[in-house]
Image 1 (spheres, rainbow over the protein chains, first blue to last red):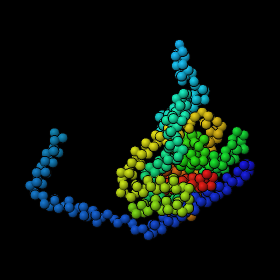
Image 2: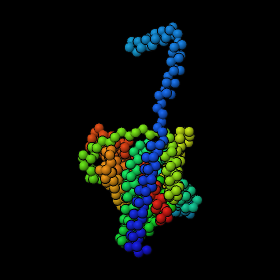
Image 3: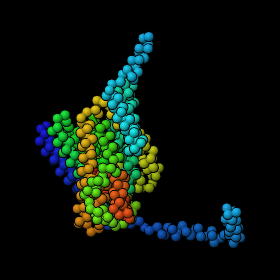
Image 4: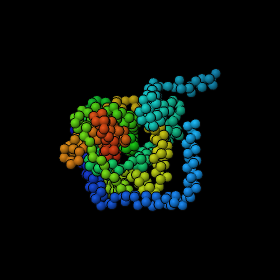
Length: 84
Length: 376
């Protein structure tokens, strides 16, 4: 192929290629913008957290004061150890 | 005595040709860059070692029946290795920043100008005696400007298999050199005030959007550019595995074990193409030069596009993130972040730069598809 002919082809490719890349990503832009409008956002996870908190609090309520006292004293003893 | 002579005739010393020694030195240079300078070690190390293996006299690595011969024919000539890597890259990519700020798609598109401008440059180089690039060769060389290794290897294996070694080495070398090539261009094209621009925080992106996105990209590619579906399809598969959250095992395999295994073989396969007869010529020098130009033009057009967009956009845009439009994920985004921090130590651009960065991956895959459709 003649060099000027190749250069013209290259120039066509340059224009066509860039135009296509822009059109393609431009369409994707439109799509993402639409998606942002119409796809609902994730539900904030607070209700789930409430659920997960409640089972934890139940055993705490059931825990007898004796057990709590035993754990507290054990923790206190443990905390004393490294200092000594 | 005859046995001794036969044995001598079989040694490497008796069979070396100077060109093989030079190629082994090139392989050793790649090993040096990988091990000492830490330039893209994951690829340059197997490529460098592959180059040494491929040039051992009498070992027949590259002859039919040799290991590198099969690795190349099974994985690279068919295009399968770069595609599997692309699936892993998809599984590693979080499109959140892009979905939150879709304007950055245009930055990823602008940076592809480097590819098409280099195509022009490669043809222009034919005016210099000693160069004879066909349009297919020029397209394969130009894709280096996309700064995307798997895409470059995929396109080169389809359009210009003879130039594959040089193209792959150039692509990965320049990707490793992103922190050196880009900052001077970015500084030259922006003012201090522009580099200090703070961008608004990105909105949270819902899981549904992240799942729909890869499917939408695939759908659009099917409609408008089927030639790009091998690349985009594998990329979207990886991304869907990641975002769907139901196949964590597959997603984790794609982004760890599988991509690692294939990287070893891809590197060896590319290294096998670094044989003296195909690498030691003027064209390789031309490819290395054109690659650097492609990269620089891509960076510059990304920055200029970001500047232009900043003038019209309601929300502020820091032009530095435009440079991340060349793919090279996540290195280019990190560079944008670093140059931004130099101007304003409290300005973190990393997340904002990830938008154009992943848009660049899509952009270069689309550009590769265009070249395949028009030239291939």
